[in-house]
Every structure is written in structure tokens, then in C-alpha cells.
View: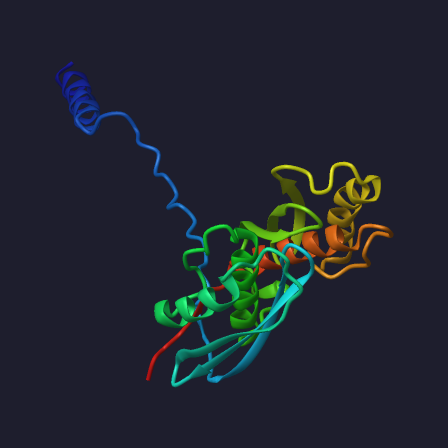
Length: 228
């Protein structure tokens, strides 16, 4: 009898000890950290970029010297509402050492075209491939025939999974432009490239979509200036 009592007492002690630790806890896995690509340094050189303004492309040339933006020049344009933006915006970028500056009053579209063209020039200094883009969703904007086009691009495992156009439709009264906004994103996903054939009768809209997608992809990898 004494042995049975001793055994029961031992079991009770074990259960009491286990109970003191509380209920079993589930160990949560550490959250997966998203890979952040290292910024790419902009080397010294002369770079060009283009972006659509009111009428057509505005072409910009950027010179980087000793790791700094030394000069920004507008090489070509056909703007009708530029006001003083063609002269105002480039020196602002040099002063700020960046492509995002205040637009000229009354010439927002042209000002944005200059800034976007300068950003394209800056990005061309250190090209990236689709394989360089980390998984995620990125947004880019470029001007179409009449309005800005915003593209939301989702990338998974080095592939473009989807392209969605957000915001107001470009050139709503032009059937070809409306069709382009349906088929161009599909072609980009199918081809796995931001460069595809333009849709007939909607060249400006097609190019605007492609540039918005490219801008989204480029935004995934920072380019930085390193003054010497």
C-alpha cells in the first residue's frame, strides 16, 4: 500500500511541475524578410532620357561629374504650354541634386515631363534586368496621349505576374486608346518585358503604358549619387 501511495505522490508531483509551465506554446516562425536590393551608384557620364509632355516627347541630357549632377539640359521638345519651365526646372535639379523639384506654375505637365525624362536618364546609368527586381508590387507613372497613366506592377520570383492600370483612363473618347489599355498590359505579362508592340491607332497611349511599367520596375532598385 505504501508503495502505491508513493507512486501516486510521485505522479502528482510530476503533473504539478508540468502545470507550472502553463499551456504548451506555439513557436511562431520569424517573419520572412524582404530582400532589399543594394542601391546602384550613378557613375560619371552623360545620360539621356525622354518623357511625353503636352505635345510630344521632351528629351533631357544629364551630366554627372564627380558623383554629382553637374548639368541638366533640354535637348528637344515641341511644347506649346511650357511657359518658363524649360529654363526653370533643369537648374533646380542641379541645385537639389535630384530629379524631383517644384514644377513651374502653369506648366505642370511640361515640368513633370522634364523631371521624368531626367529620372530616366539617371536610371539609364545603371541598367537593371527583370531578375534584379525583388518580389513586390511597384507603381510607375508616365504620360499617355492626354493624361498620366499609372501602372501597378507585381513581380514574383523574377517574373511579371500582373500589370494593372489605375486612375482615370487615357483618351477616353478614342476607341483605339481604350483597347490599348486592355491589351498592352496583357502583352507585357505574356512577353515578360515592358517593351511590346504598340496598339494600332494608339501609339502615345501604348508608349505611356510601357513607360509607366518600366518606371515601376526601375523604382525597385534605387540609384544614388555619391559626390567625391
